[in-house]
Image (cartoon, rainbow, N blue to C red; front, side, top):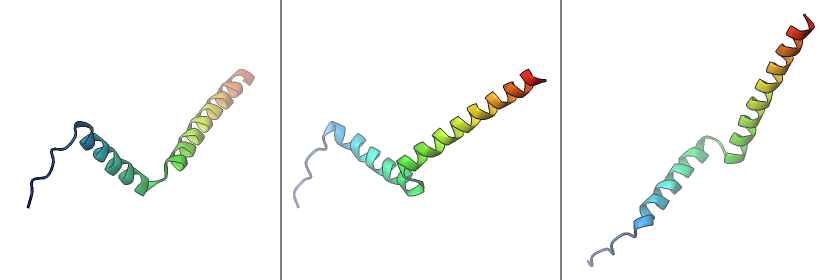
Length: 58
């Protein structure tokens, strides 16, 4: 059995990224996550505007 060639410097970080991405994708696809975040942000902003409007009306 021959020796394995020494790993390149950026190889480990790429591998870590890949496993990390796969782990994240197992929970929810990236686009779905983005949609969820956008929805939460929009809803939060909408609620804040609505509260301000109510306070101004009173």
